[in-house]
Amino acid sequence: MKNIFSFLVLNAFLFTSNTGVAQSAKLKSVQVAVDQLKRAMISGDSIQLAMISSDYLSYGHSGGHVEGKFEFIEKISSGKSDFVSMDITEQSINIKGKTAIVRHLLNAATNDNGKPGNVKLFVMLVFLKEHGQWKMYARQAVKA
Image 1 (cartoon, rainbow, N blue to C red):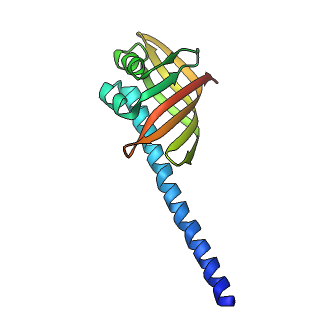
Image 2 (cartoon, rainbow, N blue to C red; image 1 turned 90 degrees about the horizontal axis):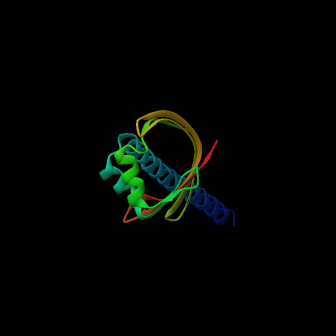
Image 3 (spheres, rainbow, N blue to C red; image 1 turned 90 degrees about the vertical axis):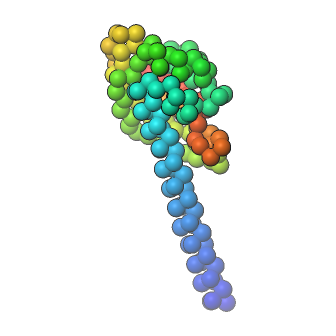
């Protein structure tokens, strides 16, 4: 009986350890996607923006305007919405299956249409794993 109990405890420990490793790898892969999004938004690279965005993107601004993928990419790549620098803090990532919810505080220097400014936003991103890649499916921001 003691051997069976020891076996069960050891298997439970190993399963928990392996699950933690798998979860850690998933967290890192979502963090990579967030970093790719950040770099693409700063550079304004339309190809990178397209690669990180789902075709079904719903991108909500703090002012209430909601865009799809095409509008989002056009605004960033044209400089209408220009992020000069971006600092992300207080980030949390929660993953369930092929869905990840990312929350963070975003502080950014902007140059929208050539007009310098700063924004401070609470952001929620939803990433879905599509064809093995994390894609931004939804984003909503509110003023901090």
